[in-house]
Image 1 (cartoon, rainbow, N blue to C red):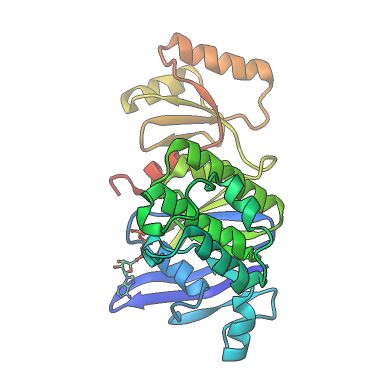
Image 2 (image 1 turned 120 degrees about the vertical axis):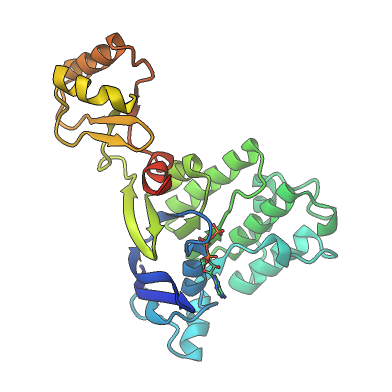
Length: 299
Ligand SMILES: Nc1ncnc2c1ncn2[C@@H]1O[C@H](COP(=O)(O)OP(=O)(O)OP(=O)(O)O)[C@@H](O)[C@H]1O
C-alpha cells in the first residue's frame, strides 16, 4: 500500500499541491488528470522523493518512508519512474539500457528477452538510441521500466508519441502489470485511453483533488447519454421528468442514470429521446474526457 499523506507544495506564492491525501493498493492503477501546469508531475516527483514537499509524507507498506538516507535506500528498491526520453544515452543501444535497469533493480536480466519480444523491439534493440524514432524511444523507456519490475511504478505521459497499435500494445501491458499486483500512478492527457486501464482517475484543480472517478466495474454508475442543446432541456423535463441523479454537463451532454431502471424503462427513454430528434444516445459511464470538459472547459 502506497500512501500520500497531507502533501502540499508551493513555488513562491503559487500553491501547486494543497493537502493531497491518497492511498493506492496493490493491483490498482490510478490516473492523474489536469490541464498543463497543474501539479501532476510535481506530485509524481514528490512520491519518488525527487522533490521534498513543503508538508506531508509518502509511506510504502506503512513502514517505509524517506525520513532517513537508510530508509530512502530501502524505499527506492520498490519504486521506479518511467525514464524520460531525454535521459536516454544516444550512443548506447536499447538492449544496454534495458539490461542496466534489470540489473539495477532485480540483479538479473532474465526477463529481458521476453520484454523485447512483447514490445516488438527485436529488430532495433541492438542499434544505438540515436537511430530511434520517438515511438521507438518511448517503447524503450517502457521496456526499461518492465525490466526494473518494481512493485510501484510511476509514469508521466507513458503513451507519448506512440501510434495506435503501440498504444494498444502498452495498454495491454499495463493491464497485465495491474493483474500482477503492481501499484501504478499515471499522469496522462490521453483520457479515453486512461479509462481503459485505470481503476480510479483523479482530477486536480487549484492544488486539490476535485473529483475521483471510479471505474471498478460493479461500482461505477452507468447513464443514458445524449447531446441536447441547453434551450431544449426545460421542455424535455416537462414532458418526461428526469430521474434523480440526472446531470446536464457543460458540453450539452444530458446524462440519465440507469440506477434501478428496468430494461423497458431504458427503452422508453431511448425511444422518447429518438422521437424528439436526439439520436446520438449512448449508454455507459461518464468518461474522463466528459469529466474533463465539465471541470475545466471555460472555467
Ligand atoms: N522547480 C520548480 N520551480 C518553480 N515552479 C515549478 C517548479 N516545478 C514546477 N513548477 C510549477 O508548478 C506548476 C505545476 O507543474 P507540473 O510540472 O507539476 O504540472 P503538470 O500538471 O505535470 O503539467 P504538464 O501537463 O504540462 O506536464 C507549474 O506552474 C510549474 O511552472
